[in-house]
Amino acid sequence: MRIVRNIGQYFYPQKQTKMMNEGCACYVHYAIMNSLYDKGLISEGAMMEFIDYHSRVVFQAEYDDQRYSGFNPYALGFAMMQDIHRICVDPTEEDHKWFPDIAGNNEPVETLKEAWAHYRDESFILQFLSPKVMRDMRMFMIDDLSSSPHLEVAAIHDDNGYRKVRRSLARMHDISVREPDMQVVDVDIRGNRQLYIQHTEHEGIRLEKSEAEMTLGYIGQLWGYGVTLQAVDYESGEILHEVNYTPDDLVGN
Image (cartoon, rainbow, N blue to C red; front, side, top):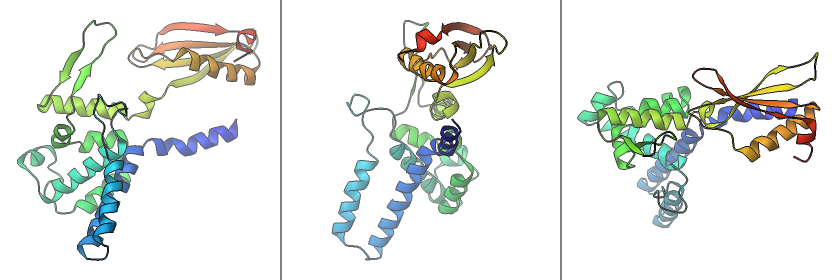
């Protein structure tokens, strides 16, 4: 258990900077290769090979493409870092309004190095995702509530919409929201030794039943007694529902 925990702790921070890491790699690789080509240090053939590889890496599939699975972290990261470079050296009036601290500072590399050192994916998006990138990638926001029979377009390309889209996209990159929050909260040591685990639900999103049961099976095997899973509302802390598993239930998982 300690080995699994230590490995999990090692990889957790890496998951918080996946988009920034991939975007940084693409940006730096692109800049180096173009600089080498401009200086005549690599051939046109080598440059064409790089462009072909690079283009496939940062390819963003359309929503109706079978390959679509959300925003490609390589594409989003590269687009944002290229845009920061543009804002620093050739800003528009809109850039001065949205990014007064960096617009026209003529220090794109230093600005990016500062961002790479002090931000993770969700905070990087909140700070640096520009209206231009949102327009280029045709971003908008839809409210999809289980309580409503209709979808609502909640954010379009205006100042208020840009801010909503940016907050929503940043939230999608927040691991504390994206990954299930499950905690051991209690155990009946003096009674039947039932173990109590709480899952905090965000926006009504529940655990996938088969995955949850398999996970509880592993926990039950380690614990050796019954397990109770409680679903708790993120806002109120209220227990929404709970499921009890006995050792007999957990045998076979």
